[in-house]
Length: 79
Picture (cartoon, rainbow, N blue to C red):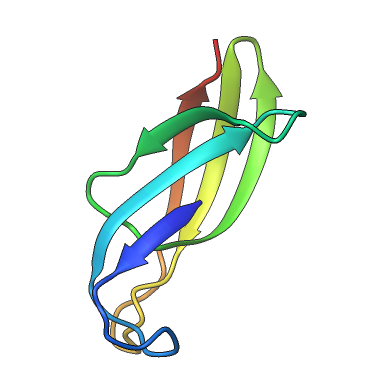
């Protein structure tokens, strides 16, 4: 996963402005990529290989003690 946060400091959290999940090929090149909407801040991923893609289980982090993490599922096509 990759997340872009709007902040002036790399060690301070900021609003999540873009997010994506993807795969990396065995040669190191970028494979499948899917931008997320809404822009969830993904902190953990579990992937199950299925025909034509992956079934993902994703955990989010809102960086807010009053907002619980979300447990999400998604399908990423690799075909």
